[in-house]
Image (cartoon, rainbow, N blue to C red; front, side, top):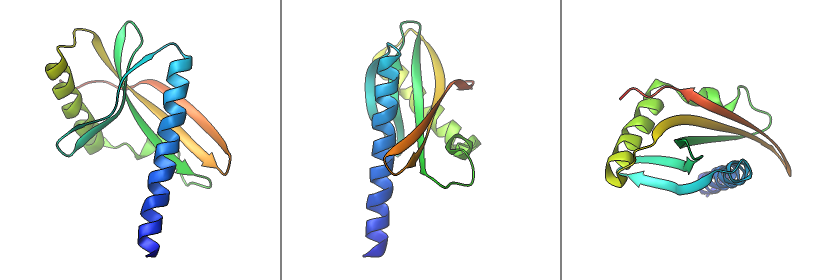
Length: 126
């Protein structure tokens, strides 16, 4: 039962982080193309269009206190999965825009939060 609550709490925190990231991107003038787009076992958290780039946005959310910034938890394997899913999305939707890979890092502390937006966080390896 305790593990079930932990999973639900983690999912709630993740959803809250995605909601905050979505709102942040919209306030920057981006239109959200898709949220939680799935391709098999791969998922793209947010896909946004800023008029120049199709932005693939990975959202990482942790609760305070945390040992390291959430964005640091995105290693090479996760980046490869994101890029594979992005290739599929671009192909399926006939995207002609350049693609950029961004990260939104959210740290939640009760009702408070901090958000860091990292544009062009990593380069595509097509």
